[in-house]
Image 1: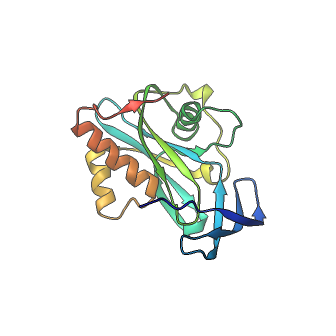
Image 2: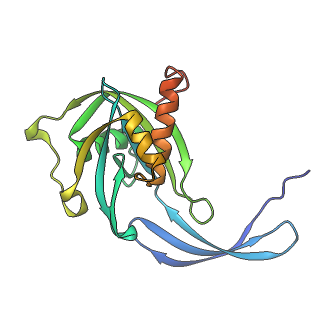
Image 3: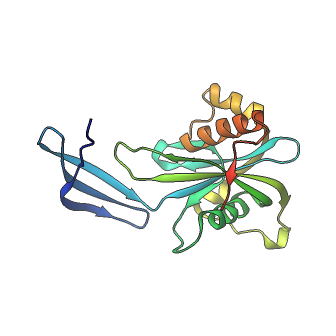
Length: 194
């Protein structure tokens, strides 16, 4: 079977904002037709599953307006600083959202969050050898982050929370399950963070 090359024959921008843009594309199909596809282009993101020496994972509870409530999530953030490597972004987000830093990072998993309509991808790192940030060096939090709840959970309990439907943020679900699997494999499946 020969792979068909889908081509975008036209594109119209519908919205442009600081985090994402929306386009309506006309795309060729293998049957010779052309279809319309709406696409959300995003800058991408990183996430961090941070484990301490007791196999506890730090999660944050944060208000998410789009779902109308608070969600348990891993520390995460947009790749919105030009030229900043993903690992640097991950370390910065860990510090800003949890008041912890890590000396060791490994690459846990990469995923596309909603490939049916968005190009958003997220790279999830495993952070270990964590330590608190000194009080005077902590990042001031505003907006939704001002009310963050920061809690350490046993990794097995966090996985159980996923299975009970208490953790529903897709990237966090993926990161927690990947971390549990990597731990079960003796960390042998981890990739280098760089």
